[in-house]
Image 1 (cartoon, rainbow, N blue to C red):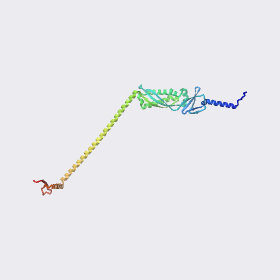
Image 2: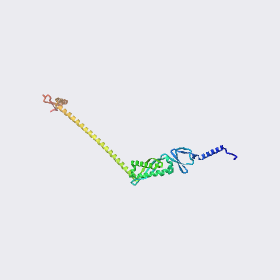
Image 3: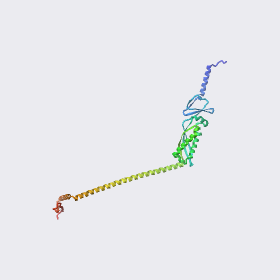
Image 4: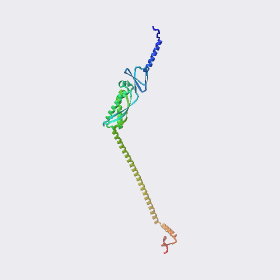
Length: 299
């Protein structure tokens, strides 16, 4: 028998110390904290575990697990590729693909593909480039890429094609957007010259419209002046006719009015009488209206 027998109390202390030491050494291996928007997948001696660990704290877990973290949030991948068209020209197109990983598919992704970056390199980029080239074959001319209808059809075709290709791989594609289109240099120069010619034509049209408007305004002004002159001439004619009518009426009235002739004779005599050298003779003095005859000076 030992000189110092081990009691049950001492055994409990030793076990407690051992557990504490194990926890201090391997404590972090017994739990895992997954950040928001991420998914953790474990492997045990290289074997992928089917269980997934979503955001939050998970305890206890096997301390022998090796962890692989996947970002399951919405992501955007930009890609630029040269796309040939039926006219054998190469057009540079830059697109953006909005996508995310399916959390429940991450164990299969880890097993068949690898990491998040591997998914983009192995699945997303090749599929996108292949679809771009394939769609380019259906476009007759490179400059057709600038047509709104062509761009809409291209985005729709890329979206449906990527969905069909990537969803079985655990990738959900939500949108494909065309960011930029760069046509061959000589086409860009031709388009710029065409736009300049169109702008010049529009400028000439505007100038012609301005000149035409001015001429119409001048014609309207001339017609207004002509109308005013015609009205003025009519006014003058009317006034002249009125004056002539007035004179004719006066003359007619005078000719038919004996009293008026007497009055005029009296006025004449009155004027003559003021001159002391004047001599007045009357013709037919017996007449009710003798006509005076003035004799100035002595014979």
